Each structure stands twice: as structure tokens, then as C-alpha cells.
Picture 1 (spheres, rainbow, N blue to C red):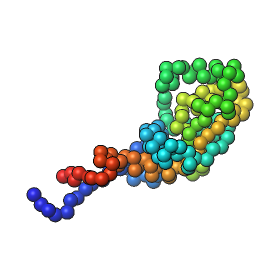
Picture 2 (cartoon, rainbow, N blue to C red):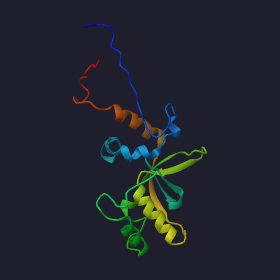
Picture 3 (cartoon, rainbow, N blue to C red):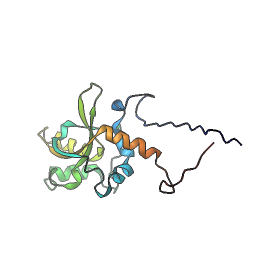
Picture 4 (tube, one colour):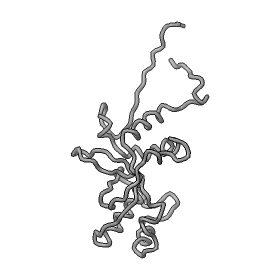
Length: 172
């Protein structure tokens, strides 16, 4: 056994981009895997202190995933929400659950774009907009800064303390 220096190799894989890709072109879908970090950052309000609330048209928001399930986590179908929107039983601006969390980041053309973490709800809003002949559908969004989200993601990936940060175990 040696008392010499300990070498630690660290690899942070943020996913969604080629190895070595700059953070501004990585996939915003990482937000869906960041739920604990989004809830744990900043105390009771989560990221609310960093988010800027805006109202934008549904057509201005992009999806961050290439696929999704046809049902919400509680088992309800997407069509059920679309029908409620069509019937006027749910107002996109008034229904709190339709406030979407988005990140603002540059797209592949280097233009700022909004990417939603709430893809099923966004799909319902876009489908509703399609069914009403693409009339404006205002949506309340919480816009998070992209680099702040990425920094939290990198920190969250490394945050695995079992001693509240008071001790660390050296590995081989």
C-alpha cells in the first residue's frame, strides 16, 4: 500500500450531445432527468427564484424529447385534456398545472428558443391549437436559464454523499 497521491478520474456525461460538445448545444431533454435537482435547488421554491414567468404562444415552445407516452403519469389520456380544452372546461392561462417549465437556449441555428420539460402537456396545448385552426393559445411558462440548469445537472450527477458532505471515501 502506498501513501502517495491518489488519482481520481472524473467523467461527467451530460448526455444528448457528442463527446466534448459545448453546453449550449446539448439536449434540453436533460430537464426530464433533473426532476430531483429542480426540486432540491434553492429551498422551498425550487428554482422559482431563478425562473422568469412569461406568457407565450404555444407555437413558440418546442419539445425536448423525440417521443413520449400517450398517457399522463396518473393514467389519463392526452386526448382527455385536449377535449377539456376544446370544451372550454380548462383555460390554459388559468389552470396552474398548465404552467410549463422551459429553458431558453440557442437552437441549432444559434437562435434563442424555448424548450419545454413538460412535453405531454405541451403536446395537448399544440394539438388544441391545431384543432382551433392555429389561433393563438397563450401559455404561462417559467423560463429557466440554460447554463444554470446545466451547472445544476453537473452538480447533481456528482452529489451522492451519504454523510451530508462531512466525509468522503477514497476509491482505487
